[in-house]
Image 1 (cartoon, rainbow, N blue to C red):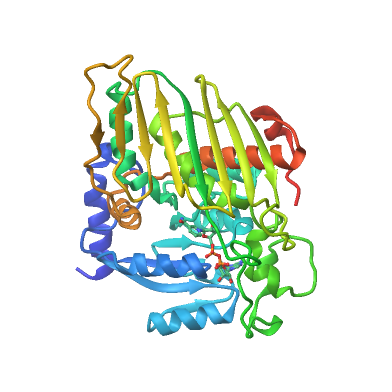
Image 2: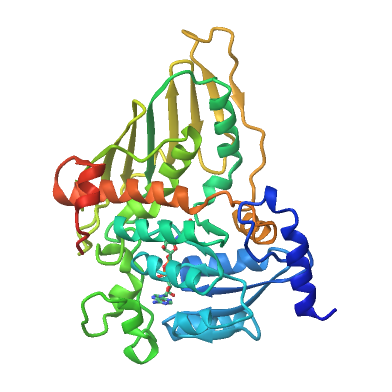
Length: 404
Ligand SMILES: NC(=O)c1ccc[n+]([C@@H]2O[C@H](COP(=O)([O-])OP(=O)(O)OC[C@H]3O[C@@H](n4cnc5c(N)ncnc54)[C@H](O)[C@@H]3O)[C@@H](O)[C@H]2O)c1
């Protein structure tokens, strides 16, 4: 049997077990087939993911696309023989590519998401799933229509703490949950704003496909600061809600099985370093949920004493989630006098390996587009509230036209 017919045979064999598969009509790779992966946008996070995917057994990283020549050169030096492109469409034209990892800036996520599905590839897309609510609607619809395996880069959905939280909540240890407190905090030296990156000297108009970066945003001369520091500007980014709240809100939504928020309110501002950024560095968000739950999230960029955590507060018990640490539970003696405190003992799963496993089995990954969608809408509702200076309901948020 040659390689192609072996693949076809293995795919057909796997389809025989379709009843247990999430994506039964999809093509299926056999256990011994190598998964051929490409990447779009290999900057800071993309380089982490490049290392992660190469660490998964049976994966071959064969191509990458990035608008900046420095990134393509870096990839060639790390992965001998890798094909590189400055236009992601050329990468998606490759017939012998199974799957694509997207780690581009937020304003291009939906384009890369939709193009990857249209090209018939499985997809790992970094969070936040999209830059706007209409884009999230389109991506979710496309995901539902496709038989592709899609993982969103919400890696805390693969954590031991998520497994334990779901189980303990299901077992009734928390009683009625009405409030979740969560926060994240960072600090930087005086005069240096969080996230600000130096522009490399080779970041010139000659070395960058600027039009592909703009991706339909109003045309203007090459601006290396915005290319490197896109995170600071609404046109390309969603501030710290899109960078970090999204991880925590997805974790909380997953643990409690929360639907979309019914309303959001966000206050704050650019208070820590007035360095020309548009997105706030100091944030207080309140999200109302239909099931009588309110979630608060706060963030500071000029004090990191309390680091980051989520606390789920129930009538019968409390959960405290600190990243990379075991989940902790304390009973509320008022309603659970015989309850005992507990530390989680489940194991973390490797989020990238989970995606690759699902590419073979066609099962649903730990962070499918549906949680990507719910967490993205929470992010966009909070940002719309901040930018419109008022509480925003889900219906109002859906009716708004996204603005830069
Ligand atoms: N899951 C996590 O924990 C985590 C952590 C950090 C960042 N992220 C996410 O990863 C994404 C990238 O963040 P980053 O810090 O790596 O940004 P970055 O600017 O360092 O990297 C983005 C890369 O995309 C390239 N690019 C821009 N436009 C492109 C286009 N049209 N086609 C192809 N490449 C293009 C840029 O040249 C750059 O190399 C963001 O969505 C961010 O939120 C996720």
